Image (cartoon, rainbow, N blue to C red; front, side, top):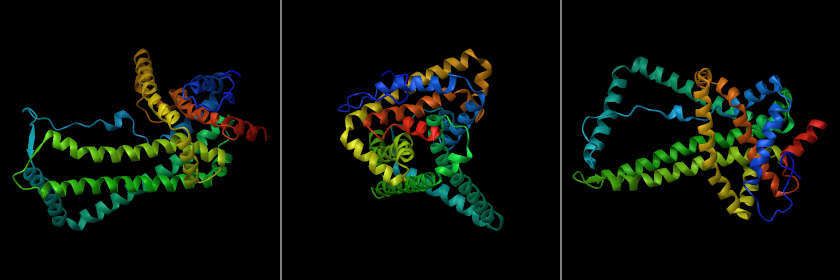
Length: 328
């Protein structure tokens, strides 16, 4: 048994090792992309990887310019001043809309419909791309129409789950922030909010946001492969995953913690690659092109959880299932 074989499974199932699949993931990535190198397959897998990343936001998408002031940051804020400023901003916005409602209301409604439509379409394409990417790396398949129709039921179930998750998350976060805002406003106009108190108010918001992020990450990392293996809906796949997480909590925890050094190493590798190749540094900013250039990383991060799941025993090897389908 060697890690170079993509369907190799450790002989002992009493311990699910999150480190053992790393070598297998490297070997599978090398075997899939470079043995032999096929430009057509590379571009097709790059397209599927791009589809699976449509709703992801990279670090550059989060860069914002904060308001700067020449004065030093204060250690406390007056709650009444904060609430007054917020109410004033809302009031000014409403007054602007009322003054120009004839054209602003239709414009806002039109923009909202466009944004909503694009957002829903991206989630739908992302859900379809996730399952197609798993099929592509396990079957070495470059024929898109067949898996596109084959996994339509599973992809639609994944789409509905993600749509509910993406709607429910912001609503709960806004409700929590509104509740905390109400508590602060009722605490008295002369009350002052210190930095530790503000940090304490942010803890529930951060925990809730982290919980929704974790559900989304587990869905992409494990639920999608389980859907591919079991040909089931998203909720059933989540039930299967939770059962395994209860059986092997330490293994899943270590798997999650291992993502931190992996992200650091891959991030440094991308930076070094961009510095050494000045041309690629500019190309990495172009959508789709950056995914094609960094395809080995995307393939590695997709096959790594597949090898991790293959340790659970019979019926958990996505590569064996993919090869059986391809041979059939």
